Image (cartoon, rainbow, N blue to C red; front, side):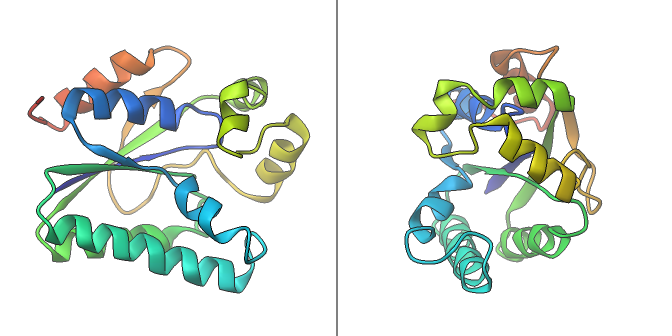
Length: 179
Protein backbone atom coordinates (compact mmCIF):
# COMPACT_ATOMS: atom_id res chain seq x y z
CA UNK A 1 0.00 0.00 0.00
CA UNK A 2 1.11 3.54 -0.76
CA UNK A 3 0.27 6.02 1.97
CA UNK A 4 0.25 9.54 0.55
CA UNK A 5 0.99 11.61 3.68
CA UNK A 6 0.00 15.20 2.86
CA UNK A 7 0.99 17.70 5.52
CA UNK A 8 1.27 21.41 6.10
CA UNK A 9 -0.24 24.20 8.19
CA UNK A 10 -3.99 24.75 8.53
CA UNK A 11 -5.53 26.29 5.39
CA UNK A 12 -2.56 25.40 3.18
CA UNK A 13 -4.79 23.27 0.93
CA UNK A 14 -4.05 19.72 2.13
CA UNK A 15 -7.60 18.39 1.88
CA UNK A 16 -8.21 20.11 -1.46
CA UNK A 17 -5.11 18.43 -2.91
CA UNK A 18 -6.02 15.11 -1.25
CA UNK A 19 -9.42 15.11 -2.98
CA UNK A 20 -7.75 15.64 -6.36
CA UNK A 21 -5.29 12.79 -5.76
CA UNK A 22 -8.20 10.58 -4.67
CA UNK A 23 -10.07 11.40 -7.90
CA UNK A 24 -7.05 10.39 -10.00
CA UNK A 25 -6.07 7.30 -8.05
CA UNK A 26 -9.27 5.97 -6.49
CA UNK A 27 -7.60 6.14 -3.05
CA UNK A 28 -9.62 6.96 0.04
CA UNK A 29 -8.86 10.06 2.09
CA UNK A 30 -8.21 9.66 5.80
CA UNK A 31 -8.34 13.31 6.79
CA UNK A 32 -6.93 14.25 10.13
CA UNK A 33 -10.23 15.71 11.30
CA UNK A 34 -12.19 12.44 11.21
CA UNK A 35 -10.38 11.47 14.40
CA UNK A 36 -10.58 14.94 15.94
CA UNK A 37 -14.32 15.09 15.25
CA UNK A 38 -14.89 11.68 16.85
CA UNK A 39 -12.92 12.43 20.02
CA UNK A 40 -13.62 16.12 20.73
CA UNK A 41 -17.19 15.65 22.01
CA UNK A 42 -15.86 13.42 24.80
CA UNK A 43 -12.35 14.68 25.58
CA UNK A 44 -10.93 18.19 25.48
CA UNK A 45 -8.86 18.87 22.38
CA UNK A 46 -5.11 18.32 23.00
CA UNK A 47 -5.64 16.74 26.41
CA UNK A 48 -3.66 13.57 27.25
CA UNK A 49 -6.68 11.25 26.75
CA UNK A 50 -7.48 13.03 23.48
CA UNK A 51 -3.99 12.29 22.10
CA UNK A 52 -4.00 8.69 23.38
CA UNK A 53 -7.30 7.91 21.68
CA UNK A 54 -6.32 9.81 18.53
CA UNK A 55 -3.16 7.71 18.26
CA UNK A 56 -5.03 4.45 18.85
CA UNK A 57 -7.63 5.27 16.20
CA UNK A 58 -5.17 6.46 13.55
CA UNK A 59 -2.89 3.49 14.09
CA UNK A 60 -5.77 1.01 13.91
CA UNK A 61 -7.04 2.55 10.66
CA UNK A 62 -3.57 2.50 9.10
CA UNK A 63 -2.80 -1.04 10.23
CA UNK A 64 -6.05 -2.42 8.84
CA UNK A 65 -5.71 -0.50 5.57
CA UNK A 66 -2.26 -1.98 4.96
CA UNK A 67 -3.25 -5.49 6.08
CA UNK A 68 -6.36 -5.47 3.90
CA UNK A 69 -4.23 -4.81 0.85
CA UNK A 70 -5.51 -1.39 -0.15
CA UNK A 71 -3.63 0.01 -3.12
CA UNK A 72 -3.35 3.35 -1.43
CA UNK A 73 -4.62 5.75 1.16
CA UNK A 74 -4.22 9.50 1.58
CA UNK A 75 -3.70 10.95 5.05
CA UNK A 76 -3.80 14.69 5.73
CA UNK A 77 -1.91 15.94 8.75
CA UNK A 78 -0.87 19.22 10.37
CA UNK A 79 2.76 18.55 11.29
CA UNK A 80 4.31 20.52 14.19
CA UNK A 81 8.11 20.45 14.06
CA UNK A 82 9.68 18.25 16.75
CA UNK A 83 6.36 17.78 18.62
CA UNK A 84 5.00 15.38 15.99
CA UNK A 85 8.21 13.54 15.12
CA UNK A 86 7.25 10.47 17.16
CA UNK A 87 3.80 10.41 15.55
CA UNK A 88 5.23 10.58 12.04
CA UNK A 89 7.73 7.83 12.87
CA UNK A 90 4.88 5.71 14.23
CA UNK A 91 3.01 6.11 10.93
CA UNK A 92 6.13 5.12 8.97
CA UNK A 93 6.69 2.07 11.19
CA UNK A 94 3.08 0.86 10.89
CA UNK A 95 2.97 1.19 7.12
CA UNK A 96 6.45 -0.11 6.35
CA UNK A 97 6.36 -3.02 8.82
CA UNK A 98 3.31 -4.25 6.92
CA UNK A 99 4.95 -3.95 3.49
CA UNK A 100 3.70 -0.50 2.55
CA UNK A 101 5.40 2.73 1.54
CA UNK A 102 4.92 6.26 2.85
CA UNK A 103 5.09 9.08 0.29
CA UNK A 104 5.47 12.48 1.95
CA UNK A 105 3.99 15.61 0.39
CA UNK A 106 4.43 18.99 2.06
CA UNK A 107 1.94 21.65 1.02
CA UNK A 108 3.70 24.95 1.52
CA UNK A 109 2.62 28.56 1.47
CA UNK A 110 3.29 31.60 3.61
CA UNK A 111 1.60 32.76 6.80
CA UNK A 112 -0.30 35.57 5.06
CA UNK A 113 -1.85 33.05 2.67
CA UNK A 114 -3.09 30.68 5.38
CA UNK A 115 -4.44 33.62 7.41
CA UNK A 116 -6.38 34.74 4.34
CA UNK A 117 -7.68 31.25 3.48
CA UNK A 118 -8.62 30.22 7.02
CA UNK A 119 -11.97 32.01 6.85
CA UNK A 120 -13.16 30.12 3.75
CA UNK A 121 -16.60 28.61 4.20
CA UNK A 122 -15.34 25.14 3.25
CA UNK A 123 -13.35 25.05 6.52
CA UNK A 124 -16.44 25.69 8.63
CA UNK A 125 -18.19 22.72 7.04
CA UNK A 126 -15.66 20.39 8.66
CA UNK A 127 -15.31 22.19 12.00
CA UNK A 128 -11.74 23.28 11.25
CA UNK A 129 -10.06 26.41 12.54
CA UNK A 130 -11.91 29.13 10.68
CA UNK A 131 -10.69 32.43 12.10
CA UNK A 132 -7.41 34.28 11.76
CA UNK A 133 -6.92 35.00 15.48
CA UNK A 134 -7.13 31.32 16.47
CA UNK A 135 -4.74 30.41 13.67
CA UNK A 136 -2.31 33.18 14.67
CA UNK A 137 -2.26 31.76 18.19
CA UNK A 138 -1.57 28.26 16.88
CA UNK A 139 1.20 29.52 14.60
CA UNK A 140 2.82 31.40 17.48
CA UNK A 141 2.94 28.22 19.64
CA UNK A 142 4.01 25.66 17.01
CA UNK A 143 6.33 25.50 13.99
CA UNK A 144 3.87 24.34 11.31
CA UNK A 145 5.79 25.25 8.15
CA UNK A 146 8.73 22.84 8.59
CA UNK A 147 9.30 19.65 6.58
CA UNK A 148 9.27 16.30 8.38
CA UNK A 149 12.89 15.37 9.14
CA UNK A 150 12.67 11.58 8.72
CA UNK A 151 12.26 11.47 4.96
CA UNK A 152 12.44 13.67 1.94
CA UNK A 153 9.14 15.27 0.98
CA UNK A 154 7.78 16.44 -2.32
CA UNK A 155 7.17 20.14 -1.58
CA UNK A 156 4.36 21.87 -3.46
CA UNK A 157 3.59 25.58 -3.17
CA UNK A 158 -0.19 25.85 -3.12
CA UNK A 159 0.01 29.54 -4.05
CA UNK A 160 1.68 28.72 -7.37
CA UNK A 161 0.15 25.37 -8.33
CA UNK A 162 -3.54 24.42 -8.49
CA UNK A 163 -4.87 21.43 -6.58
CA UNK A 164 -5.31 19.52 -9.85
CA UNK A 165 -1.73 20.30 -10.92
CA UNK A 166 -0.55 19.32 -7.44
CA UNK A 167 -2.26 15.95 -7.77
CA UNK A 168 -0.55 15.37 -11.12
CA UNK A 169 2.82 16.27 -9.58
CA UNK A 170 2.27 13.78 -6.74
CA UNK A 171 1.18 10.98 -9.06
CA UNK A 172 4.15 11.55 -11.38
CA UNK A 173 6.74 12.07 -8.63
CA UNK A 174 5.79 8.87 -6.80
CA UNK A 175 5.13 6.97 -10.04
CA UNK A 176 1.60 6.02 -9.05
CA UNK A 177 -0.57 4.12 -11.51
CA UNK A 178 -3.73 6.09 -12.27
CA UNK A 179 -6.93 4.11 -12.17
